[in-house]
Image 1 (spheres, helix red, strand yellow):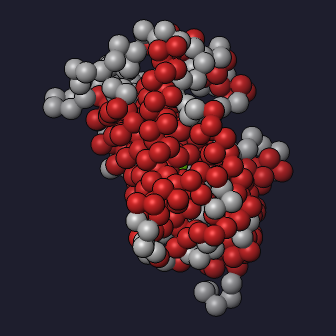
Image 2 (tube, protein in one colour):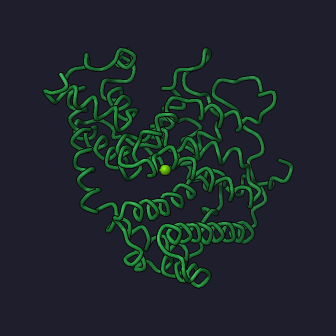
Length: 374
Ligand code: MG
């Protein structure tokens, strides 16, 4: 990567447990490969994004979402001459700690923990916990022993209280410093990818129509553009061209605005980035468009009655499982029970539930609460 910008991350500051350098890969390629081979990564295939995994073969899951985030991240990193391998590793790992059933799963688990008097559940922190501790596949260490740069990118938000327990990784939150451009990019690539694939999946599920989507100014604009190029286009191809056009225009804005921000802030070194404002950003107009789109999706897709039914069911399942395992720890598999003395029952229960796929959670619920499956 000889064309890296001087303010991009070029080498790693290291891993918690030091290892000899990889022979034919970069340190960040090694991170990426470890993430891909982890169990948590494979489980993303059966975790919901917005739609429950078995609703249809074509909807996004957390696995396909993570791959799309990595694709967006890589493209932008390449255009900005940032460290593509690092961005890819962060993007692929960013949702490893996600619960089953999408956001409602996380919200419910968080609520259960807090109501029971414990620290809550936060999926970024859980992703970090997985790569630092929970994966058990290497002879010499727990977790994946990733580089500090990848771990920094995974931990996109963190409360001050939690930051105090995270050592070097928590320092930037305590001292109010910005993370690397690679980490900033992975974060925004996540948002960019899910906004537009939710539009795509919403159209596919017939929960959204092109007509109502035109309430959102950027969609109306891009739809007009597509139709001016292809006046006779209809149906699925029109949906696809629209989504493609939306992603392109948004990525271009992100690349161009970030370039301007880097120039305007006179960024020369990595240190400059830590002390500057966030630089990987949309223009003000694009930021407004994204806000408008999010508001629309919130109202028309995430609160749609058929999505709400699933959310209601999912919350009940998470709550019931949490109550069951907290009241009887012998219901937990042995490999989880052995960690209770060190981590506390509540944290082990949160690890177990958050690690479940949608269908595994359904199955456990049926085993515990329905007569038919006895
Ligand atoms: Mg995500």
